[in-house]
Length: 144
Length: 144
DNA sequence: AATAAAAATGATAATCATTATCAATATCAA
DNA sequence: TTGATATTGATAATGATTATCATTTTTATT
Image (cartoon, rainbow over all chains, first blue to last red; front, side):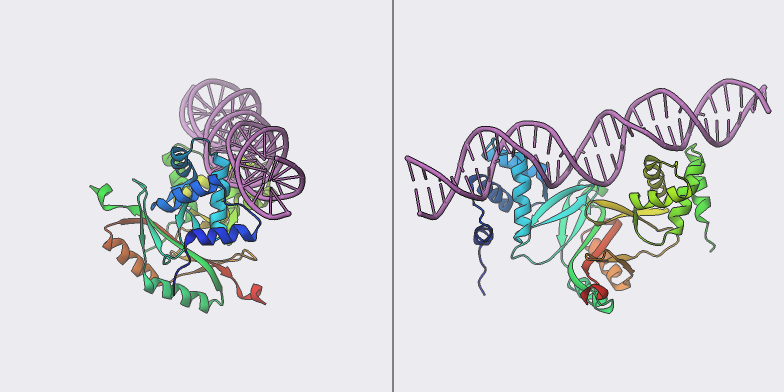
């Protein structure tokens, strides 16, 4: 089956809510989709301002919340008390390995862990909505 | 091997830092150790005030941070942006099943998941310091 | 017990990330 | 082009947590 492009997802979502795909939103979405890493709002704003200096912080917050609502982005709290965002649409679920020293984030996917999570949920009669797993440690480069 | 009691752990920790086991700290620790659930600071403060109305919020914050430092407590962010605390000393590591509707927290332990986490870390040459896994969903009671 | 040095306390100001407010601007349908 | 409406950026407000500081406790020493 073919994938609906991310731009279409957002357009439809906005249309349904009588909202507009404005220029600042276009810039923010473009910057977000281009960034492969786990950026927080401040970092996203910096990159957005390289395209247009006049786009404000509040608009970045607002737009990222929209992207989460329509399923294009997911927020994670990988470091202390700061949300960061990553693309999720059309990608497989994955978990995170976080180096607490250099703040590198690696993604990984382990099907068996996934399966045991489902089993655990079933055993407790929980309907799982989402799940997060994060391993914190020191990466190879930082150990040297 | 026998277990060093939690009170001793705290005493030694404080002694080492030239700190004192004061009356407010005693009350807060007692309340924390008695509570089996995952309470946030506000909830802990309420319970502490039932023992002594004059103990302030700041002292609860400070004392809970000490308990985390000395390894008696662990903080988790199970709901949006609020830390909650649980006993960890002398207990096995466990993960959390969180009902997003009634806010119930169930603990579970899955040795195989644990093992696969370690394998994953090894594969990526990470030295794991800690790990968190949380399954969010709807519990059995809330489904009815 | 009295005292002096040091740590702890509670009240509150400060901080930080995020959200709400609002007047001015941009967008879109007619 | 116009008029209704959504959006924007600047900034005030919020809520959780931490820092500050004068006052009070605690502890060791006399």
